[in-house]
Image (cartoon, rainbow over all chains, first blue to last red; front, side):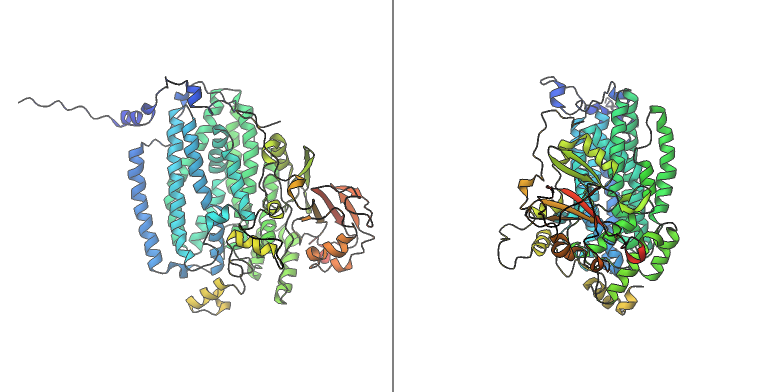
Length: 519
Length: 118
């Protein structure tokens, strides 16, 4: 009997090549440029896609196996958390409001990222980049699901967590993250990777991830912590994609350098503005603090970022234009952002509150040059007024920056007593900005940003009511109609934490007095 | 500069005057950062400018203890950041205010809680 000749199994390296690069073919029935129409129009010149280093070094079958095992573990923890009433173990019901911000502001971005990486993963002619984007696309979809599952347990017990996707598409402050992503997805594929993979995932992501995940750990939220651990290995791959893509573009052709520099300038600033909400969460919304926004900024941006841009200098890349202003902002933006949410606390689907005495002391200690001088006086006044039943609620809608869509809360560089106003004229209309950098982003592509869906303007145009609502009817309350359109449960989701249903329920479940629940 | 695109790129601006029932006016009160952001208000162009202090702004800024103390004859106005002297008897339109203009006012002697610009 003849011994059958077994075909030799592919070695690891060959197998990897076959399952990634080997999947590519050049089209013959149609020209490549027609099949890949977005690959060149941004002006990025690629001479040799084979120089692309795969950042993930994974084949799809290995990916499924590895992620499947990881997720089994994650869901075991989430189940245990639910069965043990883990929600009662958090430090304080105020903490849940950080989760509400995350669920409505960040989680839907994961879904958008999934869509966008799937789109981009179709557009490159280079297989390495295509495979990397497709894997990240699946990562983002998994994160969207696992975050939703990890947080859905809280939705059973706390208000404001019932419609994250609906809210993300409509609510005024959520237009900030939403528009950031829509700006990226309406760019070409190379700009998209510079925006999301490099500027966000590589440069800024620690500022988002660390405060939320360490914040969760410090505040007894094991469900979110476990999600964080599960996502961490994915995030490090995403960072690798970000830096690989950037270096690849810079190495392929010197003409790419000024284009990429322009994108870094733009997306560093867009990302920095987007993180204002994280800054406020970190400094004001965690009952047990991890580190201040300023400390995080110094560690992850000033130190790590400085060395990154020293490294990139050999390609002719310098630090982003807004660097100095962003570094100055480390002393201000958390205070400015939280204060405006406190003011508009009737119009948010999470609770705000006056910081307690010891929290103010912490802020003074962490922000010795700015907190007492610029921000404490308003808190002292607001606290007095709230005690007398006159809690501040601003009812007039804010003026927004045309680019970042954040209310015009940011102050002049060098003078924190003056709001920064910038404007441009375009096609007979005025456009307003919070900063030189948001103005410059607009001025570079005005045709794009004149289409911005600014929530305040949409409300005034009458576009934020549910279908069938008649604004001419007697007794029509436009603000209540807007909240209805947002799916807010007025009186439960919004207003101050003091006196909220969340506060009362949490105290009752834990058997604390309402006073005790805050400790 | 303009958008780099594969095809002609032309889309309508979202916030042209015709889309609003009344022109938008942006207003900020200097040295009062308790109101951490200027506000946006749709105001009919025939609104007398003087009505801002008496009818429009009390609902927006009345919470601040300085507001009741404002002497509107002494208020300094700025339009797009430049000093500007509106006529309170004339309408917003006759004072030259157009859709999405931004005006600010300073109230000399009143600069927030204990002079802290809050």
